Length: 155
Image 1 (cartoon, helix red, strand yellow):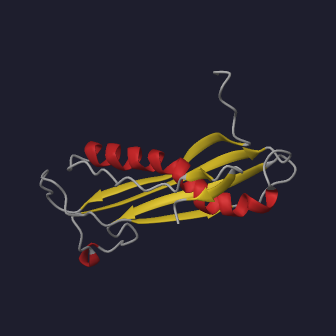
Image 2: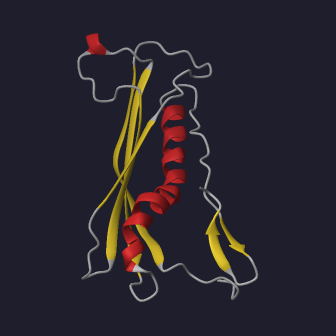
Protein backbone atom coordinates (compact mmCIF):
# COMPACT_ATOMS: atom_id res chain seq x y z
CA UNK A 1 0.00 0.00 0.00
CA UNK A 2 1.22 3.50 -0.72
CA UNK A 3 3.12 5.14 2.10
CA UNK A 4 0.86 8.20 2.09
CA UNK A 5 -2.25 6.18 3.04
CA UNK A 6 -3.06 5.18 6.60
CA UNK A 7 -5.35 2.22 7.29
CA UNK A 8 -8.63 3.00 9.02
CA UNK A 9 -8.90 1.52 12.55
CA UNK A 10 -11.98 -0.45 11.44
CA UNK A 11 -11.43 -2.99 8.68
CA UNK A 12 -13.84 -5.24 6.79
CA UNK A 13 -12.99 -8.91 7.38
CA UNK A 14 -15.64 -10.41 5.10
CA UNK A 15 -19.15 -10.32 3.69
CA UNK A 16 -21.62 -13.19 3.64
CA UNK A 17 -24.83 -13.36 1.63
CA UNK A 18 -27.62 -14.34 4.02
CA UNK A 19 -30.40 -14.13 1.43
CA UNK A 20 -30.76 -13.57 -2.32
CA UNK A 21 -34.41 -13.69 -3.37
CA UNK A 22 -36.24 -12.68 -6.52
CA UNK A 23 -39.68 -13.65 -7.77
CA UNK A 24 -41.02 -12.49 -11.13
CA UNK A 25 -44.79 -12.29 -10.97
CA UNK A 26 -46.19 -13.32 -14.35
CA UNK A 27 -44.81 -12.28 -17.72
CA UNK A 28 -42.57 -9.31 -17.16
CA UNK A 29 -41.65 -6.89 -19.91
CA UNK A 30 -37.95 -6.11 -20.08
CA UNK A 31 -38.59 -2.38 -20.40
CA UNK A 32 -37.36 0.06 -17.80
CA UNK A 33 -38.87 -0.90 -14.47
CA UNK A 34 -41.32 1.29 -12.59
CA UNK A 35 -40.49 -0.56 -9.35
CA UNK A 36 -38.26 2.29 -8.22
CA UNK A 37 -39.18 2.26 -4.54
CA UNK A 38 -37.11 0.18 -2.19
CA UNK A 39 -36.67 -0.32 1.52
CA UNK A 40 -33.28 -0.56 3.14
CA UNK A 41 -32.51 -1.68 6.68
CA UNK A 42 -29.46 -1.92 8.89
CA UNK A 43 -28.69 -3.78 12.08
CA UNK A 44 -25.62 -4.61 14.11
CA UNK A 45 -24.46 -6.93 16.84
CA UNK A 46 -22.90 -5.86 20.09
CA UNK A 47 -19.15 -5.37 19.93
CA UNK A 48 -17.32 -8.60 20.75
CA UNK A 49 -14.52 -7.44 23.02
CA UNK A 50 -12.81 -10.88 22.91
CA UNK A 51 -12.08 -10.86 19.19
CA UNK A 52 -12.55 -7.09 18.59
CA UNK A 53 -15.31 -7.57 15.98
CA UNK A 54 -18.76 -6.28 15.22
CA UNK A 55 -21.28 -7.76 12.75
CA UNK A 56 -23.30 -5.45 10.52
CA UNK A 57 -26.39 -6.56 8.60
CA UNK A 58 -27.80 -4.68 5.63
CA UNK A 59 -30.87 -5.61 3.58
CA UNK A 60 -32.83 -4.18 0.70
CA UNK A 61 -36.39 -5.05 -0.34
CA UNK A 62 -38.24 -4.20 -3.51
CA UNK A 63 -41.88 -5.15 -3.83
CA UNK A 64 -43.41 -7.68 -1.46
CA UNK A 65 -40.89 -10.50 -0.94
CA UNK A 66 -42.67 -11.74 2.21
CA UNK A 67 -45.98 -12.50 0.36
CA UNK A 68 -46.55 -16.24 -0.04
CA UNK A 69 -50.09 -16.43 -1.43
CA UNK A 70 -50.17 -15.67 -5.17
CA UNK A 71 -53.60 -14.03 -4.85
CA UNK A 72 -52.00 -11.32 -2.64
CA UNK A 73 -49.20 -10.39 -5.08
CA UNK A 74 -49.55 -6.90 -6.56
CA UNK A 75 -46.05 -6.19 -7.87
CA UNK A 76 -44.29 -7.07 -11.14
CA UNK A 77 -41.43 -8.60 -9.17
CA UNK A 78 -40.28 -8.97 -5.60
CA UNK A 79 -36.69 -8.91 -4.39
CA UNK A 80 -34.84 -9.21 -1.11
CA UNK A 81 -31.10 -9.19 -0.51
CA UNK A 82 -29.57 -9.50 2.95
CA UNK A 83 -25.83 -9.21 3.58
CA UNK A 84 -23.90 -9.77 6.79
CA UNK A 85 -20.43 -8.26 7.23
CA UNK A 86 -17.83 -8.70 9.93
CA UNK A 87 -15.55 -5.81 10.86
CA UNK A 88 -12.52 -5.79 13.14
CA UNK A 89 -11.93 -2.75 15.33
CA UNK A 90 -8.58 -1.52 16.59
CA UNK A 91 -9.65 -0.56 20.11
CA UNK A 92 -6.54 1.51 20.71
CA UNK A 93 -7.03 3.69 17.62
CA UNK A 94 -10.84 3.96 17.39
CA UNK A 95 -12.87 5.88 20.00
CA UNK A 96 -15.08 3.05 21.29
CA UNK A 97 -17.80 5.46 22.46
CA UNK A 98 -18.36 6.26 18.75
CA UNK A 99 -18.65 2.61 17.57
CA UNK A 100 -22.45 2.44 17.63
CA UNK A 101 -22.69 5.65 15.62
CA UNK A 102 -20.17 4.24 13.13
CA UNK A 103 -22.17 0.98 12.88
CA UNK A 104 -25.42 2.82 12.17
CA UNK A 105 -24.12 5.56 9.84
CA UNK A 106 -20.79 4.61 8.27
CA UNK A 107 -21.07 0.83 7.90
CA UNK A 108 -24.17 1.02 5.65
CA UNK A 109 -22.25 3.30 3.28
CA UNK A 110 -19.44 0.74 3.11
CA UNK A 111 -21.86 -2.13 2.38
CA UNK A 112 -24.21 -0.25 0.03
CA UNK A 113 -22.14 -0.83 -3.14
CA UNK A 114 -22.28 -4.59 -2.50
CA UNK A 115 -26.08 -4.45 -2.17
CA UNK A 116 -26.32 -2.34 -5.36
CA UNK A 117 -24.27 -4.90 -7.30
CA UNK A 118 -26.42 -7.81 -6.08
CA UNK A 119 -29.66 -6.00 -7.00
CA UNK A 120 -28.35 -5.19 -10.47
CA UNK A 121 -26.98 -8.69 -11.13
CA UNK A 122 -30.01 -10.53 -9.74
CA UNK A 123 -32.50 -8.56 -11.83
CA UNK A 124 -30.43 -9.19 -14.98
CA UNK A 125 -30.21 -12.91 -14.22
CA UNK A 126 -33.98 -13.04 -13.73
CA UNK A 127 -34.45 -11.65 -17.25
CA UNK A 128 -35.99 -8.36 -16.19
CA UNK A 129 -34.84 -4.79 -16.66
CA UNK A 130 -31.74 -4.26 -14.53
CA UNK A 131 -32.28 -2.20 -11.41
CA UNK A 132 -29.63 0.30 -10.36
CA UNK A 133 -30.21 1.55 -6.85
CA UNK A 134 -29.55 5.29 -6.63
CA UNK A 135 -26.31 6.69 -5.30
CA UNK A 136 -26.46 8.03 -1.77
CA UNK A 137 -25.07 11.34 -0.61
CA UNK A 138 -22.17 10.87 1.78
CA UNK A 139 -21.55 13.49 4.48
CA UNK A 140 -18.13 15.05 4.06
CA UNK A 141 -15.66 16.18 6.65
CA UNK A 142 -13.90 19.51 6.23
CA UNK A 143 -11.23 21.31 8.16
CA UNK A 144 -12.39 24.74 9.31
CA UNK A 145 -10.28 27.71 10.31
CA UNK A 146 -6.59 27.81 10.85
CA UNK A 147 -6.71 25.84 14.12
CA UNK A 148 -7.66 22.62 12.32
CA UNK A 149 -11.17 22.26 13.75
CA UNK A 150 -13.08 19.46 12.07
CA UNK A 151 -16.68 20.05 11.04
CA UNK A 152 -19.35 17.84 9.47
CA UNK A 153 -20.57 19.46 6.26
CA UNK A 154 -23.13 16.71 5.65
CA UNK A 155 -25.68 18.03 8.17
